[in-house]
Image (cartoon, rainbow over the protein chains, first blue to last red):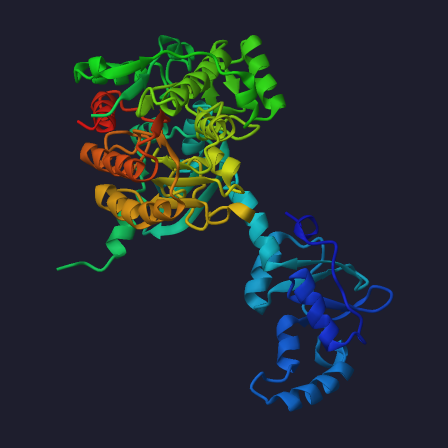
Length: 225
Length: 316
């Protein structure tokens, strides 16, 4: 669960004197939105986003002769003029959880990953994080989601896991929602099987309440009086 | 009244999935009994299975996969790729007979001997991928039939309708780049049901973009939602595509009494869906339609559902 494993290591970068237009083209070509700006020795000095580039562009509502004029000016403008200096970075040994919390706090779309000397090692974006968590959820594999409502006390999860393991069914993942309703938790095992009816019966026999997500959904709908 | 074929073979019972498996031989007996009790057998063209030529299996599946399955049977393995796929030493031969029987049936339709047919086969096929068994399925029967129609009978556009309650991931993946085979599936929403694919935004890829269409149904939505989606999604799509032959993946597991799913389709709902499909076949493919069994596990309901299904094919 380290950033190192999920980050993109083949980073497209620019240098401080790269033209703004060229940076824009580069992002378009590689379908990316963040370009780390590095020195020759690989040290990170800033980051430029597609929004930085677009904000630097003349408005399309300016009439055309002016645009040519503006473009000429832009041609002389370099990345250094528009980049964010000293951007928020993350180390390859940070965990994905760190990255997730930091992305929420800083409200950015990607972090450059740098080593102790400030050298760029990679970049990790919201998309990379989503991919990592999709993996963790196991939903790339065929299976079915169960919902089980349990009392908020020790040992409940063990019972559920044991009951399922006895049926020789593998887990894609198990999620726990701690705040489902007062005093209860909801457990969502994602099971790599097509056959969950016997498991449901077994869990009900053990005294667990199966969650019916549709009931919840229908309760939310506006009622026709 | 149409000339309808019925593929049934006792050798389909030889694929043994162990004592507790929902995909059990008894399913086909229940289907046969329902059709027999309905007094429909004398009016049907009964078809026995023959073994598929391997070239047709290879038209869809990786040769290494075919050999791997054959070997697993020779070694007497009881499980293949996933624990869901329980098997026995007869599984490979039964799967060859299932595909072979379907190809014979398709041939009879193309030769004009029959108008349409229902193939009551095991093991089912629509989850099977090119190189992987999944969800009780080993060879993708319907995909093999579609390729056979195209290569042997020069059918240009094949329309596949899959109303098993689970999404036919295998069929979709096999044809997702192919604009000559339209794959439509209506199934329980993938966040609630196996195998977790078949979302609305899966619409095909590359040249095949726009030739895959999925209608996920949320749990408990039943007949009304099926009618809405079939009329709103499938009918306009097939109006545009105009298939020359319609293949149907039949799953009786969306039924309200089937504990494999939660969409709550009724017996009448099933009849409505099938009537609509036969109507489309009359309109686009001069009635040419072959339906192939996938899932359906409620042994008490299978007889009536199968009987209604065949009655609608006959057009009585």
